[in-house]
Image 1 (cartoon, one colour):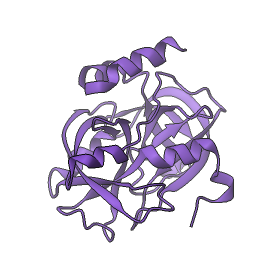
Image 2: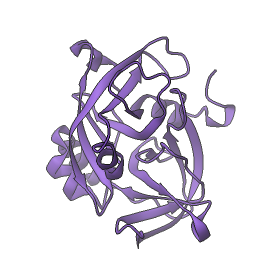
Image 3: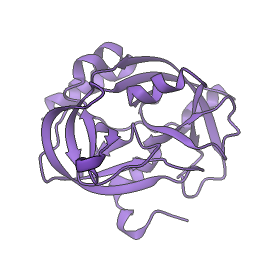
Image 4: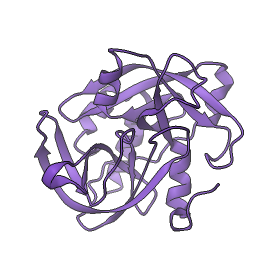
Length: 231
């Protein structure tokens, strides 16, 4: 089963390769494991970005793994597991950078697809694509949304969000990449709104997190520098 017709854009198909499910499990035999979070591959040498709480919450009761497909998620006949860690986190921004290593074979690095990332805050009313993983299995959830606001908001847990989009995201989608119409990843989703904020989701953009990402992003600092000059 492929992506729905409305999601079969270049942006969505590309995102399907660099968005990954994060699993709270001790084994790669995780086809029946519920998604604990989502992430985005930013370096094919083995670096992902996700939400800090996805990493920190898991440290109490399990080890984190992720999987990538042999081809597109909708067509793959095999998955390749990676161990997640070590990670560096910025709790106020709810963002984490993690090293990943293959569980089975070093040759599995060839299946990684890195996202084009950019230091850029999406403008209000611009359309974006969100791709993450929720529930059981590895079929991605693709959402189209409109950026509602671009301002710093402090959550009840003390973390900060840079933007809001007009769609609800679901359990397991924290860390999902926010993809522009140009196919560039500019941030991640960190939480879904509740109460009076129901129907909205919030996140952190890479422009505000640039200092943290350059300090702890292993191989992505140069890419961030190059993308920022393109603004």
